[in-house]
Length: 123
Image (cartoon, rainbow, N blue to C red; front, side):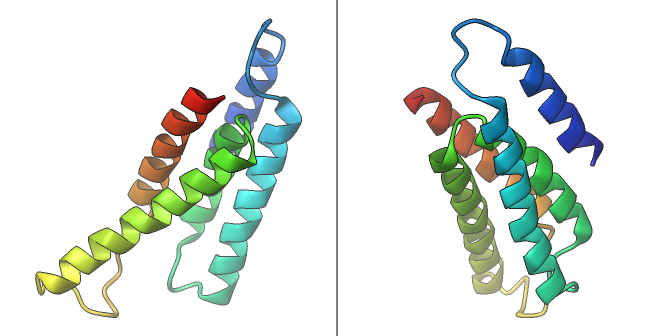
């Protein structure tokens, strides 16, 4: 939760800079939407996703939301795609099975970073 609060505070400060590309309300709504989506996934299957991923999604949603909904969707999709691809590689290599736990945080961060790179470029 500190990550989300700090991200929103810093983005709020940046909103006073002339010619910035994002808006603070978009950052807040991105944080709430992505955090709520991950919270629902956590509530549906608490063993499948940890609450740390939910907290991390709040901060990632704030930063992605700064650039708009397209960036939020792109970063979220990229994270899930990267996680699925890595899981597939592990299964094909025989190093993981259906019940193997794979930390999702690195994929959430990498997907958000990819979404930021593309979102900032198109903004």
